[in-house]
Amino acid sequence: MGETVYILGVGMIKFGRFPERSVPDLGAEAALLALDDAGLGIRDMEALYSGNLLQASGMVGQRILQQIGQTGIPVVNCANACATGATAFREGWLSIKAGLHDLCLIVGTEQMGKAGLLGGPGGSRGIPTEGLLGSGTMPAVFAEAGMEHTRKHGTTFEQFAKISEKNHHHSTKNPKSMYQIETPLEKVMTAEMIAYPNTKLMCSVNVDGAAAAVIASESKARELGLGRAVKVSASVLTSDPWSERDLTMPDVNTCTRQAAKAAYEMAGIGPEDLNLVELHDCFATAEILHYENLGLCGEGEAGKLIDERETYHGGRIPVNVSGGLLSKGHPLGATGVANLFEVTQHLRREAGDRQVEGAKAGLTHVIGLGSACGVHILERVSA
Amino acid sequence: MAEEAHAKKPLPVLSFLKIPEQGDPYLEGHKCKSCGAVFLGARSVCAKCGTRDQLEATQLSNRGKLYVYSIVHRSFPGIQTPYISAIVDLEGGGTVKGNLVHIDPDPEVVRMGMPVEVIYEIAPRKDQEGNEYLTYYFQPAA
Image (cartoon, rainbow over all chains, first blue to last red):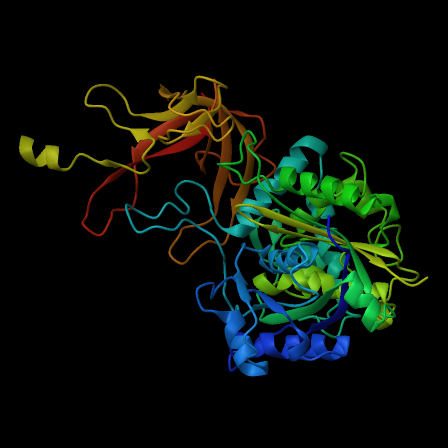
């Protein structure tokens, strides 16, 4: 394969609700933050890979350049459900790997407002089937995925709820998180039940947000100085391979397992070498599944992993120290890039109060239902 | 009267619910003759093995086992809650999603793995033209 790719700069706006602003406006702010962080300008960028889901036909990338500099570079607009941001990042990575570009700008952006429940059946023919033929809402779909873990391993409602308590706790140290509120376990468990076993506080937060990154080829990174650069050791994208129930009950496990396996092989390191993980906690139930899917523990040990607080900050393998989608928020197209922002900050030892001490390697993971899985492994360059 | 009754014949809620002129309604699967995978709804290519034009229609069983479920307390506006969203593995193949009825929506009561059966009833919703629909539900097996 071509040259190794490095992250030279990252940027992220504080997640929140900004109804008075536009999608390109949010993306432009994140892009400028990333360019400043890299010490570069828009005229240095050779291509823009833009991730946005809800305005997928709206040429968001070009509209970002209309705000920060129309240099005529190629722009690719990506949509891949909740894996949109990671897909945009990987498209940029691929173009550098292919030897086409030395410097690329990646932006993930989304405006959700108070979108409410996502999912449910589409189509206008016949009668609505929601609540008649089960539920297509995301909280229910991921509840059912969690119940499969309960069926196999006896995972309890309380164990699922602990995930949310943890991620809300983590977010208290992240000034860019939508919420920074300690949320005791009892409060999580007694919150309004949305779709058992997911209560309202076990569902990700619909927010507006944007994040961006500047990536470079190894030769360009060396020319500019590797000082704060972070190495992209693996970039993997999978779709859902056929599995027994996938077409009725979306299988988020197999595509994650295949992506993780390929990413560890590409990076030449294993889960035991990771210092932190930002994974797709769209619902509290999902985080439990991905502990095993990403190899952070053995089969059936995810409940024990959270019970023993191994994935808390300070534990053996901290997960979602940013606060995760459950508290930081989940602006669909921005999420994958925001995960890379978080891990990059830790590897550069610039994560402030929530710094994972001595972080050398980290993994990011997103799932777009339908399904797409993106996994990236990042490593610190300097000792 | 006869003509009016004919005009009111219910429509199937989904394409794979079949309402024959004679006999009882049933769920139809399409089974790959090459690898045995069972799909809901007609198709020409098997998503498991890629074989073309080897899928044959098969009547799915009305008996199965509850694989997993969720108890839905909040849904879209106008949808009555709570209800049980259930994933059921039918005997002989086919995994179907639907509401599990005639049981308390309570995790202390619903058991994964419990035997269930498919029942067919007129749906409590009509389309904009006033057409009736036949739907299916799951209930604990007798």
